[in-house]
Image (cartoon, rainbow, N blue to C red; front, side, top):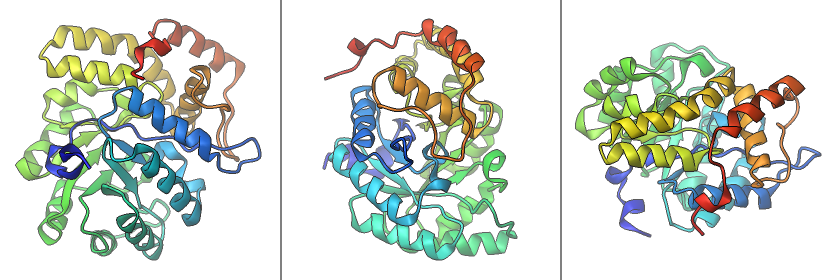
Length: 308
């Protein structure tokens, strides 16, 4: 394993959250899942995240998560860190997943709040602490109130990190205005990743974020933006992001709409054999498909962009 993978303190850059692939009957498509991993790696991803909101995780059984996660870890083969989401509605399930992936090659774990149970801070802390206590891997705490209905505060994460020093990162869904207080509150020991599909990538990097956890479908474009920003060529980085913004804004009309768009893009790029979500889920309309035609026509999605 490379030093970049082994050293949690070095994690930065674009860590795409992988979609989960299915056959037409809704069964897992493991070969397509491996193809998504290969695409992300060829796109220059600095790390991979599985079972985030982009992975239709609410439609997966614990056993399916174990099977898919194992395939992703195997396909990545230590080339970049693989961070596995272990959030679940039941503490028992989240602890089981944390133990499993700690023992089966994950480089880090991502813990999100239960989405269907409204908990007081004390109860929520007990849940997060119990899950974090099942591993010695680096832990990322996810704050996604617009999607999960639960707000995690910087004070909550700081308290958790004081009890569990392997809590090393937080992943937040916010723009630059809210990134600044997160970065200031976390200090030098806890890195801040942002999400929102990379919508605010350049601005949140300038606000102190260490990287982004977007979706996977345009990883190559987001990596190019990130690396341009890291070269301090802000004008060029902003110009690249501006070309991508119409697609990102359109896709981010709710998590299911985003996931449907992401899979449609991957299908059009020849990465996966089938678009569409695991049922039940929305299907992109003819109007949406036509709009995507226009947004994608302005982007460089040629296979030659990818490394072999």
